[in-house]
Length: 134
Image 1 (cartoon, rainbow, N blue to C red):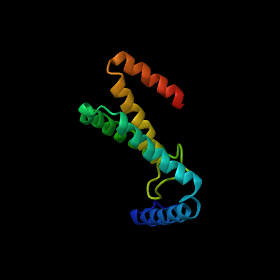
Image 2 (cartoon, rainbow, N blue to C red):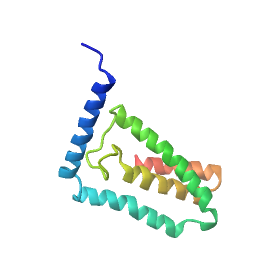
Image 3 (cartoon, one colour):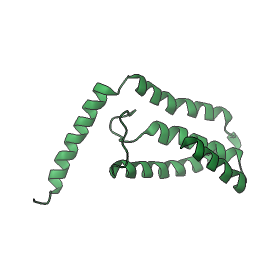
């Protein structure tokens, strides 16, 4: 067996992208699950905006953005190593569950960060959230 070249990998990757788009268009977009994912992404951000402390919004958003980067890296790593995959996706070109990665997880963590300013209560709230989400 010969070692694949970069061009071999690129051709297979292009085919995978094409297949993923075809699958997404045929089986995902505008299905109930797709609308649910869209709702799960948008609604938490709207609710968060109503309750966020506007005086500390830059600090809370910085925390959320740093956490979002970490969550996206971990999710990409899990997908790349084939530890998990997602049958339904909001966007075909991203092999991750952005509704959860950039919605629910981030919003709940930012809310905990805002409402539990002391380390002890912050850690306890995160542990409780982890138990509930797991």
